[in-house]
Image 1 (cartoon, rainbow, N blue to C red):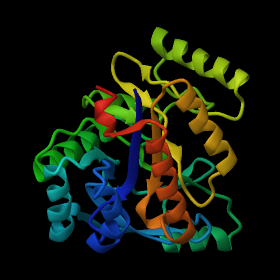
Image 2: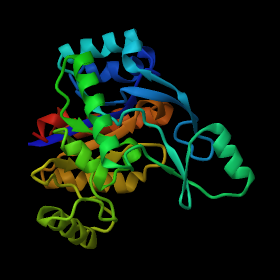
Image 3: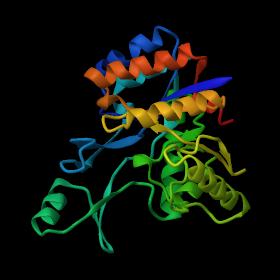
Image 4: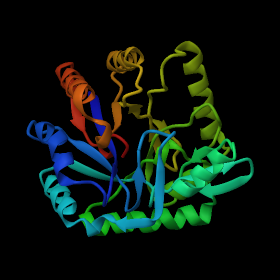
Length: 291
C-alpha cells in the first residue's frame, strides 16, 4: 500500500483559523488527513521564509492554548479523525551564528551585524545541549498532549535542523522524527546509524537527484524524509521523487507551511495531492506508518 502524509509546519498561537480553514477545508471535506507540526510556545516571526528580511521577537513567545479559536478548530478536526498533532520544537527561536559567537535572531541584532559587514547564518532551535533540549521536548510534548487530548508520537525539527544531541533528546522522549540525516553525519555513532548512513550514501550515488525515501529504523526511533513543497521547490525533481516512491510502493511525505500556500502554489498543492490519491496513494497520518 502506498501512503501519502501531508505535513504542515508552524501551527501556533499566531495561526488564524481563517487561514487554516481556507486551505484545508477542501481537503477535509474529502476525508484527507493532515499532520500538523505544532509549536507549543511560539515566538512571533516576521517575513517568514525570506532569510534576507526575516527576524523574530524573542519576548513574544505565547502558548498556543491562548488562541482559543485555533485550539477549538483543531480539536474538532482531531475528533473527526482528520488531524494529527506533532511536536515542532518548543518556541522555534532561531539563533545567529557569527564565527564562534551566537546571537538571538532579533531585528536589532540582524541590523547590527549587517551594518558591520558580519556574515551570519540562522541556526535552528534544536542545535544545542542535550539537557536543555530534553527538557524542552518533554515540556512541549506534555503540553500538547494535555491541550489537545492526544498522544504525540512524532517530532519535526524546527527549520529541519537537528544535531545528535537534539536527536537523543527527541527519542528519549519516545518520539520519531520527520526528517533524515543530510550529507553530514549528525547521529550518535553506532552500528545502526553507520549502516543507515552507508545505505543513504549508496542510494545517493545511484540516484544523485533524489532524497533517500525509505523508513530508517534506529531501534531508538524511526525517521522518514519529508519533501519540501515551497515556492523554491524544483518541480521536476519533485515529480521524479514521487514517481520513484510510487514505483517502489514507498510512502511520500509532503512537507509544507500553510503560510506559503497561496495562489499558484496552492493550486499546485491541490493538484499534486489529488494526483497522488488518483494514483493509488492513501491519505494517512505519519504515526500510522512510523509506529
